[in-house]
Length: 345
Ligand SMILES: NC(=O)c1ccc[n+]([C@@H]2O[C@H](COP(=O)([O-])OP(=O)(O)OC[C@H]3O[C@@H](n4cnc5c(N)ncnc54)[C@H](OP(=O)(O)O)[C@@H]3O)[C@@H](O)[C@H]2O)c1
Image 1 (tube, rainbow, N blue to C red):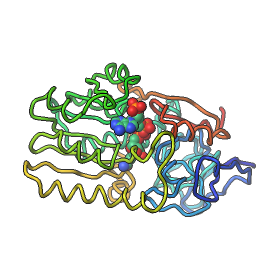
Image 2 (tube, rainbow, N blue to C red):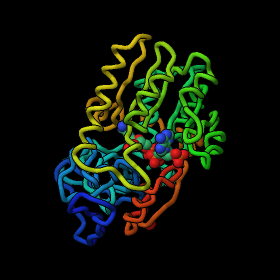
Image 3 (tube, rainbow, N blue to C red):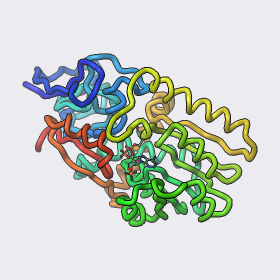
Image 4 (cartoon, rainbow, N blue to C red):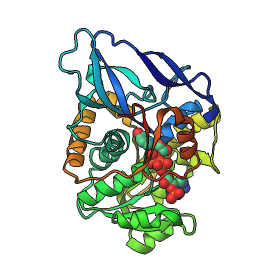
């Protein structure tokens, strides 16, 4: 059986992505083969394509952090997976494909009847939002939170989960995205026209309990200044590497992405007011606490089934147009989750 897959043989811009057609992979011992229905396209895919993501990538590779699909073959020694079961996984790479083989332990069952595109939105964005909010920040009702990139994939997830948790929320977004932030229950701040640190102190007086910062770099230190005593910045991304639709690449940025957050976290420890900067990485937490990942994703899938949360789908794009999908993310024009449709039915 033939199967399509997107491959990058070298690091670089969207042009390095090519479509290959080959024999579908066979599952090894303890593995299952998943017929991918929906694969997420994320900013992390771009960082990996450029070779500047802290997660090591060896060439050639197939991008794709998050998938939802149907188990279509089981390898020897699999215990629970059944052919026909819908599952979700976070393989980190390999998702842009019609078929992927994964260890059975990587799978989380998806309740029947869910839209694969909505379900895949939970795997990276909502698990990230949920774990930052509840596992790291231990957010509680009545606390104040500032969410950067509030109209983005993780930002909209944070707003929906923050509303459920009873947080008082503020969200930075460009002028065009202010309505999305308002509709999701937060006070929008136009970070391009005003200083968000001043704005937060003007609106709250003493500052916020939590800042979720996916922008990175110098923004993290400014987020720290928006905290009230005892507050936390959860630092989790590098959106600032994107400048006018171009990713700043090279070893210098790869090192900066790792060293700067560490330096800020140390500087925060030495500052008065018991304020902290805490880094978050979904892949490191998943390796450390795999049971948390499965538990959190299952709980979020139940919220989706019960229609308590409603992911924003930016677009559904055919697998063969993966390059175009990454160009859209690189252009900064995507609102919510961009999804590749890998098998049409
Ligand atoms: N650590 C982890 O485990 C983890 C997991 C998931 C994602 N991430 C990272 O988190 C970041 C966000 O991911 P995403 O999927 O939500 O990206 P996204 O959907 O592209 O959203 C990013 C948002 O940031 C906004 N933005 C850009 N520059 C900004 C600035 N200076 N201040 C405030 N907002 C700004 C953009 O909206 P406007 O046009 O309104 O400015 C956009 O909505 C990425 O760096 C990603 O790699 C990390």
